[in-house]
Amino acid sequence: MVDPGASIKQCYNCGTMSTPLWRRDPTTQRILCNACGLYQHTRHEPRPQALIDAENEQEDPHMGGGGDGPQCSHCFTRKTSVWRRNKDGEQVCNACGVYYRVNGRERPLSMTPSKVKPRAKHSQLEY
Image 1 (tube, rainbow, N blue to C red):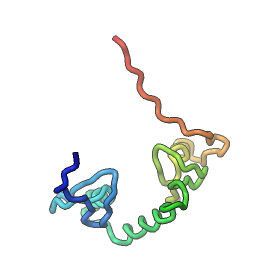
Image 2: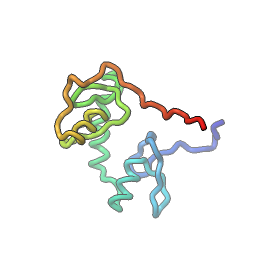
Image 3: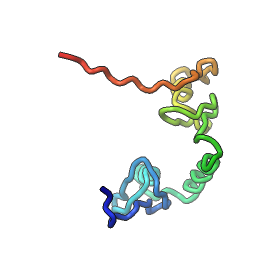
Image 4: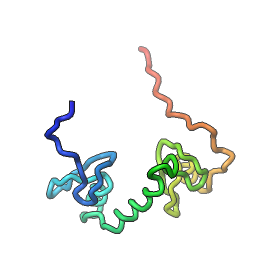
């Protein structure tokens, strides 16, 4: 049951209303989105407007019928468990990012599967 008196959360710094995790400013206790909270925690200053604007510009092409969301800059997949950034700052899927980190070279496109496999659950051990 939703409390009708509860206010909708909005980041005090950038104004976003959607984030994977809400955080708080340690000194003022104001609500921050995940990105602003992490920036503030690591740099001890608010996230600059230039970074907020750059992030909003990146997200705009994926809004409203322009596709199914982000796309890997290497293998062009749109489905992955985690998005990563390559050494040039481009968005890559988990498989391409991990392959590059482990092998020091780009993942061969022949390794791209036609279907993304979900993570296997741990089997329960019987005693």
